Length: 231
Image (tube, rainbow, N blue to C red; front, side, top):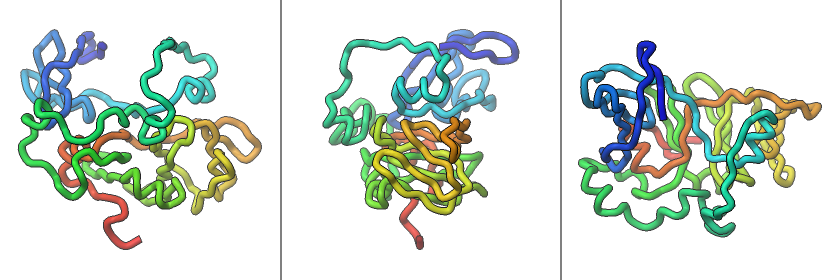
């Protein structure tokens, strides 16, 4: 992949592990970059940061629902069976313990949640919060929360079998089959936010990642955990 730094195109590839997560290295300067935050962590460009955007676990159908003009390349290979997908999407294939190669790069793990716990991590600046998959599932697959001064909806997408997050003004949410209806009249169907008349809305979303606990907590060591305190 490539990105521009100071007007120059840099090419990035995976090069090594740190805290059990892959690091990216740009071929032009040899700088290593955190793939989640976009921060340069080692090399001549330390102190610089790349712009990052949300990368969601989704489906081709959902992407086309958001933008019908999107160009998509599809493979005919099945990555997981339906039962695996229901247990956590593409991350379901990584079960049990963190492998020795990955664990050997982890210095001090956060033991507030199990290492391989699944959840949604969201962040804004220095503030981060982790929403465990099992907690969201137990609360009717959707929770509303106040994060970084805004109301955020965390929900279990019934098509992608993954947690997703978006900003909203709604005060409550409830499921109508596979449609998540919000109290402000909007609703989420097929991963797409709609207005009360059915028109497609561009959903504002926080920076987010559906991931394992160990990776998110090591990237954001002061992260809060939803469900740990009152409410």
